[in-house]
Length: 206
View (cartoon, rainbow, N blue to C red):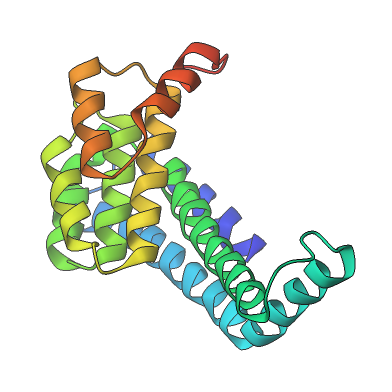
């Protein structure tokens, strides 16, 4: 996985640095491989989590019991907390790997190539990665696309939480007009008050 992430970063630097020298198909092929490598890495990580899901849940349950975090917890509550941990782990992985992809290849100079990729691969993973690029590297907030993705992922908790993470990260890093912030938080059930606190206390802004 480490090699895959490093390779993605190196290929991304090539795509961004030599975007003007590469012909259309070469540019597409290089960018396509970066995205597909990121998606394969994410799938591999999910395979690992799925293969030891029961062991992970059991381990977390044992930790809760051993440390007596809450003595009044029922067996069902312990199992629910353990299951939530596995979901949080999966959600964090999705955001983390897709964020590495966004950082590797994100630039407005490849916007035409991204559009072509989106048409060739109309998958949820591709849409999330592209919205991440637009949030991090485009000047205009893609509110309509975010709203549509939110609707498309209502029944997909993992995709929905990944989209939330991309938006929260954007609100943390970039100044957003209040009306836009209110709209986007409403679309994704993000607490606006929490974002106000972050905006007032954040020392890392772009």
